[in-house]
Image (cartoon, rainbow, N blue to C red; front, side):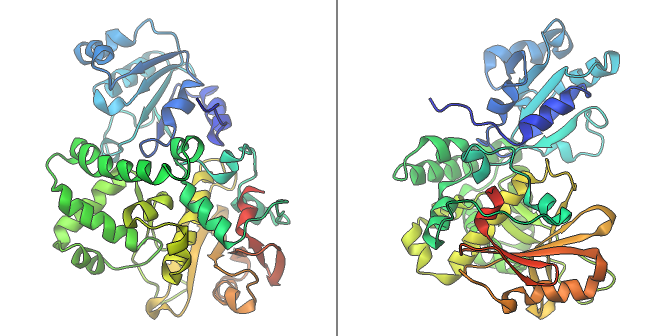
Amino acid sequence: MTAYRERAVDRLIGRLLAELPALLVVGPRASGKTTTASRHSATTVRLDRPAEAVAFQADPDAALRGLEGPVLLDEWQAVPEVLGAVKRAVDVDPRPGRFLLTGSVRADLDAPTWPGTGRLVRVPLYGMSVAEQFGRPEAVPLLDRLARGDALAVPRAVPDLRGYVELALRSGFPEAALSLSERTRPRWLESYVDQLLTRDAKQVAGTRDPAKLRRYFEAYALNTAGVADDRTLFEAAGLNRRTAQGYERLLVNLMIVDPTPPWSSNRLKRLVRSPKRYLIDSALLAAVLRVDANAILREGDLLGRLLDTFVASQIRAELAVAECRPRLYHLRQQEGRHEVDLVAEISARRVVGIEVKASASPGEDAARHLAWLRDQLGPRFVRGVVLHTGPRAYEIGERIVAAPIATLWA
């Protein structure tokens, strides 16, 4: 059995439990929520097990009383009535460190009047970053380093292009990344997708056509890290617009895709308003398409999408613990004249820009979109970085640096 690898959110969970009565840890299935939350709990209740769920279905208030805290209520959505019981318990006794809830589905959380409002603080937990897989959960988030103007360190061992592709295909799901061989991992990921699109989707949305949902998910995967319009996706999947929009909401609620919103500013005109759609884990792209590292290295468009999705997953994993409290966006002008892969907005509407390039030594041309954004925003543009597949970090322009992708876990 693989020993526990500390997660970046472990310290955050500990700190929040010292002051707050209840936390809700959310994330995709198999991202490690239960394993991580259980390290902070004294009592664990598995609500997806009928024998443990019976009492909570019958009388959740009585079932909660007397349990030693912090109490972990795992898979809360199996008995949604438990949310009301937690609310009432916290209202009566708001001592810190009483409850932890975990779940894979966030559909009920989107309701404006759900019982946890003002009582449960959400902590997102996505797949493991490479820093966490390498045993470096304390690594300072890249966005914090950029916001502070820190020099970007480079680790001793920097992968080459193939090495980055192999890391991207390793996945961030703990079981796949830490326990499985390179030969077995693709089968685990394919099974994950199958179960997600059949069993998990049915639990959230009831009757859905699995074949149509799979076609839509495959179209989504092919367009990961892209700004495809809705029509491109629903026509590729052979669906109508309404059905496709419903499927996207379902995949978002399952937290397996992330439509990153467009960034906007009244200083900039003619910006595309479509989201940039990402798979939550870069290895899922290979699982859906059934391709390996060799196939990806032979196809430039697929390589670019994989690396962009991989970098986005690393940064997304750090958002909850970053001190600069960033919000993540993308930027693209109409007709593609200027495009920045990721734009992080930090305090006082200041901006950090990130580009991802499958190049070992990008020059000024690779930073031209960041330079344009810097010139448009002036002092609001804090810093830009071109993350590349080479070995060195170097200045590439005013407030713009080029650095290896491995800087993310340095």
